[in-house]
Image (cartoon, rainbow, N blue to C red; front, side):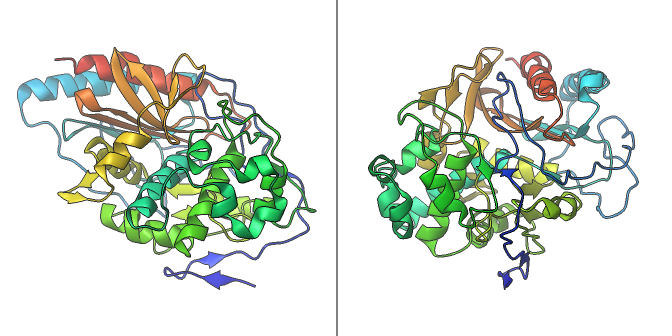
Length: 407
């Protein structure tokens, strides 16, 4: 069986004969913690060798992608141009580091102007954002509260997923939506599913074994947030996102590919696709990973958050929700990102509060509100690659970008 959504995108039928697979593809995306991961049984193919791009511009070559006009204009005054060029040159020098060999794109916007737009391969290419997906889903939760699909963060799993109450222990039934969003719901991050678990949500609920109230990064818990959203809205997560978020931000998503990413055979096609959002066995778009976007799409999302939920004069996401989801609610124990909001990381750069959506191996949307900065990075990193890439990119934000724009 297959189903079609508004966009005509195909959701792959779930197969029960699946090898054990890691749900989130990683144990954590926290940049200060070791990132260990089991790659899917069929590892997604790497891309062709990158084409070097000119300073501050998009690369040429490679089929299947279209060059994009700049999202924001470049500097207009000599002083701005001098600072922006110094930052761009310093970043390009950093990108020569072998630790950043898998960098695919970088887009830095400061005070409404493009400082650097750099792609090492096909212009306007799509890349897997990994756990940046979590921050997108968290944003959708705020929209669902706004329209009444959800009544608040104190709703429990027993209320939110009534068809799965049989798989819930009494403790799990009492877990709140806020605890899921803050990674304090007590779900472990093993993420392993096998061919005897055809119902992904039921399997995750039954596997609860952690301590409620303690921060523990969990792809399982993040996926349950997506399941809650689908149940509350009566729509697929992708359909809801298209209407409430992607369309208002100008992010094209109609030609969406949706494949069951718990099936190893799906990863090859997924990794070569354009816009895509992977699913579990039941067709629920993953809340933990699986969203493919372009750098400019990620920048649109970041700029909207920077502007308190507004995009080009329209309030897309309630300002109160943007504040709530990017405020520290729990401590992570990480030196680089010590705070966690509602599936957003909070840290510090040059003494300035920094908000970040972070994905495995260097997928980054970093926002520094006090200096009007949005920095986006994408890599072609696979789950088996080193975690040093993400650390190197966050270090570039902290030591190159943010200090350059001090008052």
